[in-house]
Length: 250
Image 1 (spheres, one colour):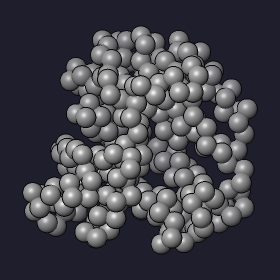
Image 2 (spheres, rainbow, N blue to C red; image 1 turned 90 degrees about the vertical axis):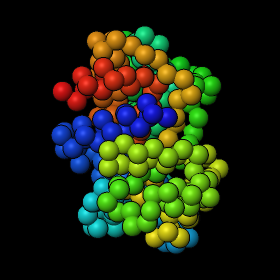
Image 3 (cartoon, one colour; image 1 turned 180 degrees about the horizontal axis):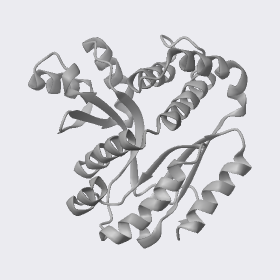
């Protein structure tokens, strides 16, 4: 999981530099809207998916008006949104899994295919990458918001279902099995901690190490996909080596 933690750290730093707040807000807004549609209403107390999405919105400092608009859309525009996934390979055999929320499937398919083609990737059939990625719950906390001893916190989180706890600079990343996502979220609530972010991610169980130059070519595809308004998440199994991390941070 150390590679996953490094990617998260790089993305946070890069995101701060690029100031892609509008893209972040758009992604969270769609998640709130689909949560209202799929999760059973606009009351977060009875809709766990909405509760998580709203916590993520607060963690991203999303304005309250944006959150309320997204909730209202769940009752009207929510029917037009659908969840779509794509699986394929970037150059040098790096696996790429794309999650989308879209109101126009034809547009999304066209845009995703175009990105793969432009950057020497290839789309595969759904399910073709099931042996590479495991779906896990991933929570992030900042150290400054922790008001109990770290050892005590770790014991509490393990009791709630945490499989892995990593500390990278000021960020704590907690990973759990898919089936323990709800119980670990409740554990945070009982501890009165609101994670900076909580979501289901696709974590690779094997990674591919490339040279910095080849890795940069893969990352061009990843960035093109992430910049698409219909794309919610992009997961891949490119190894974050120390050399690549240094190159990306410079």
